[in-house]
Image 1 (cartoon, helix red, strand yellow):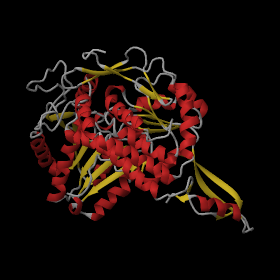
Image 2 (cartoon, one colour):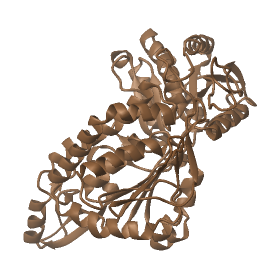
Image 3 (tube, helix red, strand yellow):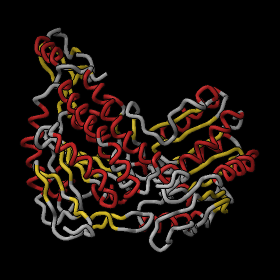
Length: 525
C-alpha cells in the first residue's frame, strides 16, 4: 500500500480481522476534507460472526463470575489508557474534536469501563442476580417464589452513533460484558477510525476471551437477518433508523429485544426567581451545550425556556458569551469549537436551522457556513454557533419537533410556570432537561410536572452551581434514555443497566430450592 492510499479499516469478526470488498464509505477530516480511511463490510459473513460469538464468547463469559468479568473490564480500560494520546489525535482528525471534546468521548468510555469494573467486583462470585426477596405463594410455608435475572444466551448487537465513537462503544460493551453477554459493535462509518483503533488495541492485548467482542466496520448489510430471540439489539441514532430496526421482518418474527436511544429535543428552564448564581449557571450551561462537540450530542440543549420578563437579559448574556467562542481548526490551541463531522451533517444542520428560522429570529449565527480564516468552505464542515428566539412560543411547532444536530438552540419566553410546563412537554419525550433556580417548592413542582417526559432531570440551585457534572454529561450511575421520541430506551443506571442483557425469571419451588438459589446469586439492589 502506498503512503497516499487511505487505510481500509478491517472488521473484527469471529476472532480475526477481515476486510470487506471495495469501498462503502470514506472517512474524512471535516476541517480540510482529506480522506483518512475507508470502510466496507461487503462480502463479510455476518451470520458466522454472530454464531461464533454465541458459541464461544457467550460460554466463556458466563463461566466467569461477576468479579472475574469485572477484572476483564479493568484490563480493557488499562489498554485504552495506555494508548490515550493516540486516540486524541484520531478524534481531532476524524471527528473534528477539540481536546475537550475528545476527552469527553475517550475518557467517558474509559471511565465507564472502570466504573462497571468496580461495580462488578461488589457482586463477587455470583453468576446470576436476584431481583427481589422470596415470597410465599400459598398457605404451605415451604412453597415460595423468587425473581432471578439470567444472562441471555445470545449476542448484544450494538449499533452506535457517529458522535461518540469511544463512549458509545464502551458504555454499551462494559454493561453487556459484565452481564456475561458478548458484544458485536457496529460504529457509524463516518467516524469509525477511533472505534477501530481501540478494538484493535484491545484485541492485540488479548485481554478478552475469544468471541467476547466483535467490531463491524461498514454497512450493517444482512446483519439483522441473522439475529435470534436470544440476542439483544441496542441502537443509538435517529428515530427513523430506530424504527427500521424495530420493524425489520426478522426482528419482528423472532421477537428480538430492541433498545433505542433516539432523537431528543432537550430543554433548559430558567426559574422565575433565579438569582445570580443560578442565572449565571444557566447561561454558562446553555453555551457549553451548544458548543461542546459542536452541539453534536443527543443530550445537548435545543430549547431554552426563560421568563418573559427576563428574555432580553438572557438573550444578551447568551449572545455575549457565544461571541467569545473561537471557531476553527481544533488543532489550534485557541479554538473552542470545531466542525460537525461531515459535509452531510453540515447540510442537515443548516437545513434544520432554516426550518427553525421560519418561526424564530436570529440572535447570532445563521443558515450559512461561517467564513473562517484558512478554511476552505467547499471542503470543510463548519456550522456557526446559532442562537434563535421564537417569535410566538405558543404557536411555534418546528422548535418542538426539529432536532438540529449541531450548535443551535432557540430561546422561548414563557408567561408563567404553567405555560413553561406546557411548552417543555411539547418536546414529546426527551433524554434530559435541566432547571435553574432557588425556590425549592418550584423545583419540586418541576420534578412532579415534567418528570414523566424525561429520562433525567438536572436541578441546579446555588449550592451546586459550580459542582454539578453538566446537563449533557451522561453519568454511568444514572439512567440514560427517555420516553416518546427519545426511544423509550434504558441504559446504564448502575446495576440496573444489567437488566437489558438478562431475562427476568420467576422461579417457583420449595423453600429449600429457593434458599439454595438465593445463596448462589447476588442482589441487584
